[in-house]
Amino acid sequence: MKRLFAVVLTSLFIVGCAPEVGSEAWCNDLKEKPKGDWTANEAADFAKHCVFK
Image (cartoon, rainbow, N blue to C red):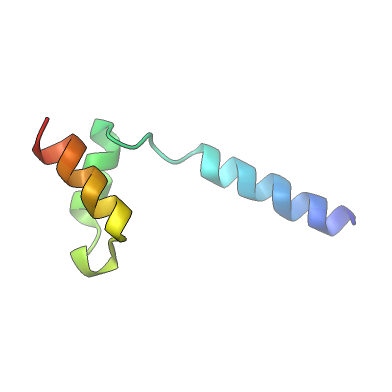
């Protein structure tokens, strides 16, 4: 049980550190990520927030 709690807590910290979708940091992170690794949601959000501001 303690191990499960530790994994969940660690996951929350990692997710909490990701830049907000649409922020300049998020756009820059996606520009550096290979386009073949983008998800459909990332591509749509990138177009909406970084291309068509």
